Length: 257
Image (cartoon, one colour):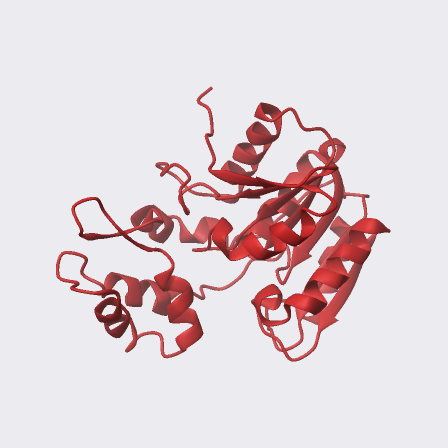
C-alpha cells in the first residue's frame, strides 16, 4: 500500500486531536485554533488529499479520505483520537467514526449533516475556471476574473488562498482542481451506516447557515445517538472563522468534559 504522505503540522502535547478542513480549504485555515488547542492536546492539523500541500491523487471521495485518515493514524502510531471536521472534513470525520469507532474518542462536527446535499459550488467552479493561469498577471487580476461569478468578497479571499506561485513565477492552484470538479458528487453524498457511533459527539451549526436544519436531527439521532447540537448565533457556514472565541470555548469545554 502506498503511503498517504498527507501534509500536516503538529502542535502541543497530550491526547491526540486531529483537525480536518473543508472543501477547497487547507490546514492554514485552522492554524490559530491548532495553536490554541495545542496548549492541552497533541494536535495534528491535516491537509486532505487533493488539497493544500498533500498529494494530488487520481480520485476524490469521502471513503478515500477516510482510508487516508486511517493510514495516517496508523503511520503516526495513534490510538484513540478526537476529531474536528468542518464541512467536507465533517463528513470524513463522521464516516471514519462510524467505520472505526474503536479509534475515536470524541467527535466534533462543524456545520454539516450526514445527508445528501444538492450541488452548491457550481458558481465557485465557474469563478476558478475563469482564472486562466497562463494569462493572469497578478493576484488582484485573478480575483477580478472571479468576481462576476462570486460576488462575496470573503468567499473570493477564501478561494484565493489556493492560488500559489510556481518556481518560474507563473500561477498555479494548490488544489487538484480537475479531480475535485469531476468527483464533486462524491463529496456531497450521504453518510450511511447500519451501526451507530456511540461515542460523545458535538455538532456545531452556524445560526444563519442552512447546512443543518431540524429535519437532519433524525439522521444524527440514528447515527450518533450520544450527540448534542449547539448553535452559534449570527454566523454562517464558516462558524469557526466568524465566531472564533465562542467556537473555541464550546469545543474546549466539550473536549474537557
